[in-house]
Each structure stands twice: as C-alpha cells, then as structure tokens.
Image (cartoon, rainbow, N blue to C red; front, top):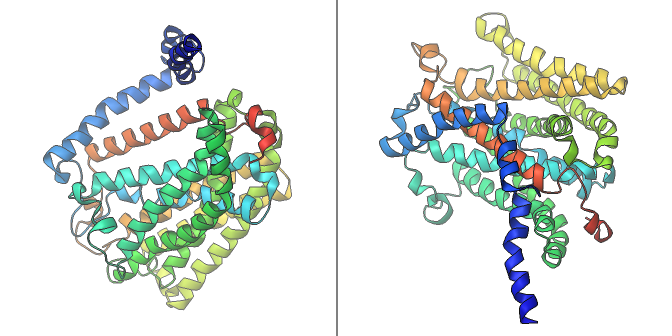
Length: 414
C-alpha cells in the first residue's frame, strides 16, 4: 500500500507537467513554441515589459503624457473605458443561458465568461500601471470609504465582479485539474453568481459613464449628455454580444482542434442569433444617442464644425452602419455577414470610448491634438499588455474545456 502511495505521489508531478505541455515531451513542446506569432509576441514583450518596470521605478511621467488636463491616457482610454464594455461578454451570455433559459447558447457561455474575466483582469492591470501611487490601490477597498464617489463604486464593483467571474469560470478550471467534488459545489453557485454578475455589471458599466457627468464643461457638448451612464450601459450589452461573436470566430478559426463538434456545428446558428440580439440593442442605442442630441438641443452643432462631422461619422458609420450590416446578415441567415458587422460594431465601441475619454475631452484647449498624441513608450506598453492578454487567453483555450465539453463530466450537467 505504501509502495502504491509512493508511486502515486511520484507520478503526480508528471501528470501535471503533461497537462501544462498538452501531453507532449518537453523538447517537442519547446519546438512548437517557435512560431512567427510567438516570435513577434516575444519582441513586443521584450520592449514593453522593461518599460512597465521603468514606469514603476521612475514614475508615470516617464512613459505617458497624461496630465491634469488630460487624465485619461490610452492606458485607460483603451484598457479601461474600451476594455470594460468589450468584457460584457460574461454577463450577457450567463444571463441569456442561466436566467432567461436560452440553453442552446450554452456552448458559448464559458468562452463568454472567460473573455469577460480576462478583460476585467487586464483592465485592472492597465489601471494599476496608470495610477500615480499604485501601492495604495487597496485604499478604496479597505481604508478610504467614499460611498458617494463614482470611483469608489467602480473600484468596488470591478474588484467584486472579477471575483464573481472567476467563480463562474471555476468549473472549467476544476475539470482541468480533475477536482470533481469541488466542481459540484462550483456548479451549485452558478445561478447565484450570474445574478450577482448582472447586478454588478449594470452598476459599474453605467458608473464609468457617470464619471463624465462631473465634467460637463470639459467634454464636447455632442458627446456630453445627462444620459451618458445609460449610453455606456446599453453599448456594453451589444459590445458583449459582438465580442462573443468575434472571439468564437477567432477561436474556431485558429484553435479548431480545441473545440468539439457541438461548438463547431452550431456556431453559425448561434452567431446569427447573437447578431439578432445585437442589432436590436444597437438600434435602441442609436435612437438614444439621437434623443440625447435632441434633449440638449445640439442639432445646430452637427453641421457647424469638424466636431459635428466627426460625431456624425461616429454614429452613422460606426453605430448605424454595422447595425444595418448585422440586420442584413440576420435576414439572410448568413453568419459571415453577421461576423463582419460584429467586428465593425466592436471598432465603433472602441472609437466612441476613445472619443469620450481622450479625443473630445478638453477639446477646446490650445494645442489639444498635439497633447493627446501618445508617446511611443506608452504605445509600446499597451501593445505588450495586449500581447500578454492574447498569450494567456490562448494558453487557457489550449488546455481547459472552454470550447468543448469534457466527456468525463457530461453526465453531471453544467
């Protein structure tokens, strides 16, 4: 008996290493890592990671142009204000399946939750790099309570929701490490975590927009609105739906062997279904943006300056147009057109958030457009974090049952 126990203990590290190397010998696994993509990723990380170290060593001013006039550098304009709505994948998919009962979308739930979790995790990383005194990041959580502060609300909700999404994704992790008993407990709390996720997401997605309610004279009138928290929340819904379409498309294209037949065979149908929901929400969002212009009586600004033309380009070319593309794809039952519309809509969400946080913030200051051009070091840091995000995401998809069902757990349900 003792001999058997010793054999079991001796083979556990080998089994764990086999999971890490996907069953390949270490030498063969190392050879497979040498790919053009990984070489480019290594170059980007070699440049960007030392710059992150430089930022923490010598201060924020060494890598960014952010100032009192322009507080939102691309670290936050891209990483937080654009990243958070694109991370709405978790709450939209979990809500659709576990709350509204659209069980046919179950093959996409884990992918949506993982995308959301990774998005929020890296949003926190961007925020940590951008904070002037990062060692005090725990203050809103444990020291300086300010329940009337929007930033306090965002800090608490993002941190709590990150934990919720980790718990939602934990069954996949537990299946990977074969912890069957713990997985059963994780499955039992799925609905509770989904409800918590919906509440938290509703509040912090809109709270990001509420930050700009405190700066009515700094944000251009066409982008400023009393309804901006509603705009942020509604856009996060269709952003999440479109992001699920985008990530599932990329996963099926480049990691096809890691998806099962149920995922691949139903993907086109599910894509069209998500596209239908996305275009409905986008029409509502477009109507609300126009109502916002009417409410503030800003019609005269639309054709009176380059800012008005830029606003029209945003709402017509990056909201209404992708919405029409999605509608055409749904009407024709063509997943390829729906995917094109989804990628277009994602670009529109990013453009809108960058407009609000950077391009149209303090637009009337002298030298505005020169001041908002990010320095090369900041761009390198953002590219390195994006690269790290993609590498970790791919690492998880390669190993854990995200786009596939583990046959050993099918009888347990999910």
